[in-house]
Length: 128
Image (tube, rainbow, N blue to C red):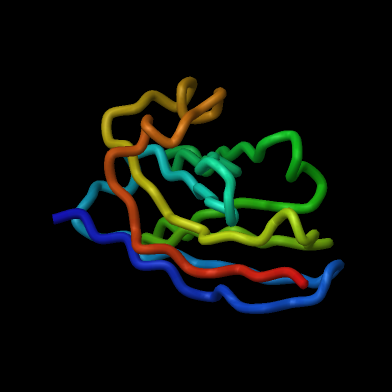
């Protein structure tokens, strides 16, 4: 079974920094598209970053460029999202997600939450 377990959320002031992690199991890490999805209060769920562990290439959405960075540790099957200069709008539950069988090209393009069949329970990030 695919298991995605997030950790590292918390509460910070605007301008602060957090790094969230995801441990991935039950899936071939080199052949999967990984994503970080966020759902803020009263907002629709959105994809904020994606990564293709097979090549370690990654992408963040325009609203997070220059502030967020996504990375992978292939040796330990872990996915990370480092968030700097956090804003109140970044508040939400951050979910690690996986999509098996997706190409690298698609993984690094425009994605929607429905493109990811597997989700973790999420970790809460509050910026206030």
